[in-house]
Image (cartoon, rainbow, N blue to C red; front, top):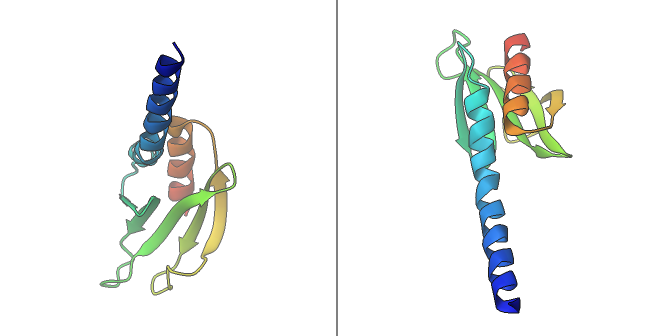
Length: 108
């Protein structure tokens, strides 16, 4: 009986670890917005939009922070390895977070 409980707990923990990256993918899918290209890179959601200058897009990055994701905006030519202009923080379930991110993208 104890062995079954331990195996169940280990299986549950493994599923939770896998769902973390899956949740980021779900947030990105729910945030799909015309004009923005979304990718998941190193556990961050990176959204880019054409600025009219080749190779220098507008960029919005949502990375883990606080209870959910912190969202920052970068102007064309900005260094995205440093902190950008904070435009919000989103939290909740993946679908709600995706909708909130889509709203931030549309306002950016």
